[in-house]
Image 1: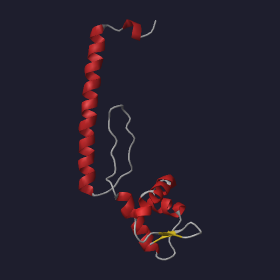
Image 2 (image 1 turned 45 degrees about the vertical axis):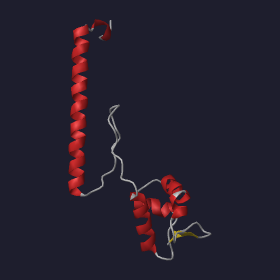
Image 3 (image 1 turned 45 degrees about the horizontal axis):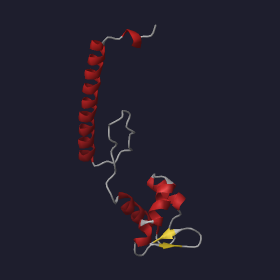
Image 4 (image 1 turned 60 degrees about the vertical axis):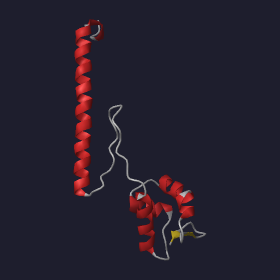
Length: 120
């Protein structure tokens, strides 16, 4: 006989209350973590949400663009390939390909050479 078949309705109510309290505490902890991150000014790697309903932290819009342009400006005329940029910026190459395909087209001064190097 399994444990679930011996549960009473009062046990289920208690479990439900405890789970709700746990989710509430996790949300409060996430708010505290966000506040600490904002104070330190550091960008930490995203942690995946382990419990359904807990939202993931999301990077602010435009951060990738500023990072890409700064790296390309530092590279000068030589520029970088997408693979090199992915290593430098610690991001996935597919995100960079998508950025160059969409936002990169609208960015003035951005050039792509025949050998696949991007430069400003």
